[in-house]
Amino acid sequence: MAYRPNYQISNKIINDLTEIAEIKAIIERAPILPRDEARLRRQALIRMVHASVSIEGNRLNAYEVNKVIEGQKVDAAEREIHEVKNYQTALNFISQWVEAKKSLNLHLILKVQELVTRSTLPPEKSGHFRKNDVYVANISKIPHKKDKEEILYVAPKAEQVPGLLKDLIEWVANADKNRVSPVIIAGIFHYQFVTIHPFTDGNGRTARILATLILYERGYDFRKLFSLEQYYNEHRKEYYLALSTGKNYQVRIGVNITSWLEYFTKGFVEEMRQIKQKLMAVSFNRVAQPAEEQVYLTSEKIKIMDYATTMGSITSDEVTDITGAAKRTAQLHLQDLVRKGLLRRIGKGPSSRYVIASQLRP
Image 1 (tube, rainbow, N blue to C red):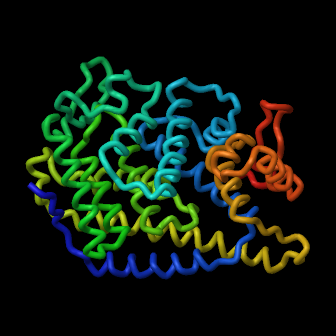
Image 2 (image 1 turned 45 degrees about the horizontal axis):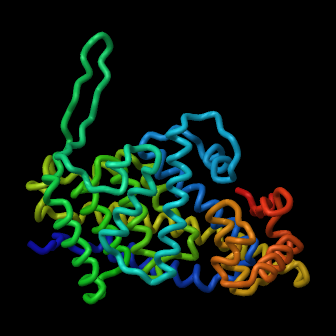
Image 3 (image 1 turned 120 degrees about the vertical axis):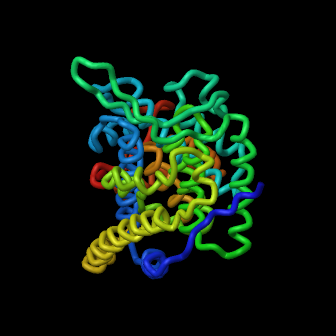
């Protein structure tokens, strides 16, 4: 049976979508120096990773997340460190997927879940749909008594998962044809994905990353300066409450999800407002800068800065991969970015790598 979400575009949603479109135009036109954009992207990356793993119980703070992404040692559990690295890797993967103009499919879904759960789940559960029925529970710790378990949601049968996901993917494709707002598509996908609950673990992180991919694909990347995960983490109770529309999958079939979309668009517009304020601040600083201090980059060097910002570092071999340039040209690109004060070199010889210059760090 084809997936047909039940929702209305309320006045509140219309107002939020209108404001999001207005801010989108401002962000796309905003005059901003590459060094400022790199810094803001770096901040967004840290916020995305920290918030999304934090929602799932990871105890690392934003400063520690930044250190992990930079390759520095952190005194924390191995699982928590893996979760941070994994989320960063998955974000980079979806950026490459979008750039390659590949479509949403089951292979992508499996790959993203495998990336976010790598080294934290047994191999048979990482990159594979669940084989058993699952439920979401809230466990209360009671002193000197047995823990109390409250079942919050029972997911659909395991054998239903592939078919339900195919129906969801088909709905996304048809929503594009029907000119549904990318924000609404991402919100509905997020909701239905966690409702299907296709994996034993990593469902929330996978849903959030794939919702981001859906936005990127449709030109709603906002220069990759946003982090919806931050809003979810700051309003975690409301996040789970908005997603909880029934105790089991049968109850949720056909349920009206307008309230979830109102929550989703509200978080979206609040994040966009913050980005707009940051861009206005750096744009003002740009106007105040002498012309000789302003730095402009070629498309190849923007790709290099984008990769270094996302992954935390870059090597000459990686420059060759992402730009198609010869090894010598890649080295010259990196040297020029170092001279411009955008990158700094770590190490010597073949093992050297380049990271965002200290003044660009959050």
